[in-house]
Length: 405
Ligand SMILES: *Cc1c(COP(=O)(O)O)cnc(C)c1O
Image (cartoon, rainbow, N blue to C red; front, side, top):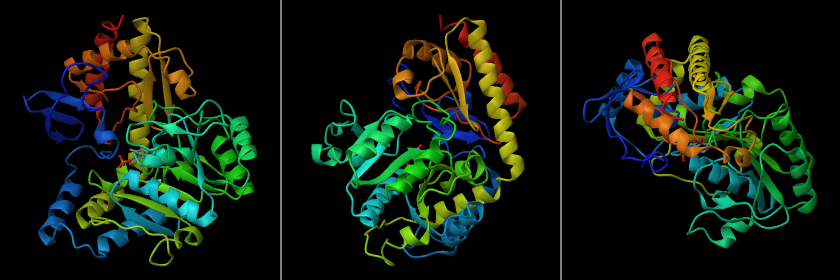
């Protein structure tokens, strides 16, 4: 993505960030709508985060042993998501979901996992899988280097269709260890989960003795104080939650969390292996903790309102220019598909006019707005996006929209 392959030209090299603004190596300023793909919810260079990190670095970069910051961060996460009892820190979302799969397989004694086409859970082999033709064929590797064996236990189906999921469980009775989903898909553009869909997944996995793995790496502590589940769902909680992005406050930190019953299968309490040299790194932990401590109810109201405004103004600009598009949101996650909506699946999303997006992207970049360089990514705002930033986005969108057709 960051190579700019989808939008043409060479990637921009950034060297400084302040609030909603980033500066490239040539001194050009942009309003940032990438936010490091999600973590920078307080904007760049937030003073409290910068101070906490600087202070931590004076003590040491890493001990490879438990620290108080790590424990306080775990407590803050559990305070925000009271259904959680255990938190295990890792360094990336990829590791969190990879460990979730290992844990689910150990807990159930089953091999197969179910994921949705277009949902991204990081780049472990078992999750880099494309669908076979229909539910009955096995998953196929989605990248050179992934073996057929690694892909064969992953069943990859279109998002949002309960019938297909019932069919999968009927086809593989007692073989499915877990169903994984993004809380709200935001890695194929933003797709709000159909009403009741997450609750349905909770229910059917319980019925069949499978684990429900809820990937909140993007939504966690961004769409609300406790993430997606505590804000938007009422059903009994998933078995495992994956977190990342915001909880590291811009540093490499992610987590797997859940009930004691499942999590205690992990070593050292249990026998499922998991480890990491920099897991719970004290600098990352204090950055995450300070970020969460600075995210109040007001912060979320502000991020929600700003996201709403940015989506509306971009959509209005495209509408005025006669550009076919679908402006979509799930909580404060927003994106625009360059096709008639509503977009409900990867199949729909891939109907996009990617060249139209590339023209819009470059039009925005030339006017000082840094959008994610792909038509399949969410746009991220922060608490630091103020009137000035929104005005720059609005003006750029009006002019860039005129260059799309
Ligand atoms: C970013 C992301 C991941 C992967 O996290 P990394 O830290 O990049 O490995 C997993 N799941 C979701 C939903 C994500 O958005």
